[in-house]
Image (cartoon, rainbow, N blue to C red; front, side, top):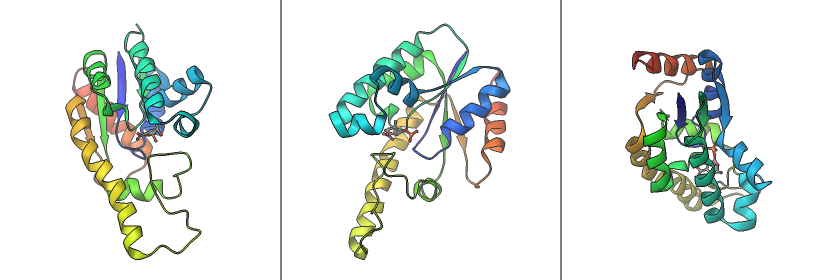
Length: 185
Ligand code: S3P
């Protein structure tokens, strides 16, 4: 079975995915790492050198190849994989797709200081004091992206793991494992 974990940046897809793959005795694949292998550049470098469009088209090709693979694995997707309709179609058709739905405040807390590695997470560089209005507009930009994507995650999820209370990734992986088992996977 091919299992895809989707969710916003900072929702724990990679850590939970790795743990889940051990529980299921499946291999673990990280989509961003596969993109890096294919393009010989990290996602952050691809964004910087060629722009988001180039990154998204490589992301789609790699996802399509994985969707066609006859193997058991857990795939941790990048947070923006749902941006393209063709990817949502691949996720719906070829994967058991699990959405890690973590509240905005929690992902914001986890992502603080991560903007270098995550080009779409905007924050002040901390070097200059930010006027209150500019700070709140950065928060707002992240929150707008988060809110817009919620509907896209919902559109392709077979299972939703809603993480209301902060808990360790091991506990989350176990909950996701149980959801998959209950579904008869
Ligand atoms: C992205 C999320 C990143 C990475 C790229 C784009 C996004 O992955 O794929 O920077 O659009 O949300 P993570 O969700 O693992 O941070």
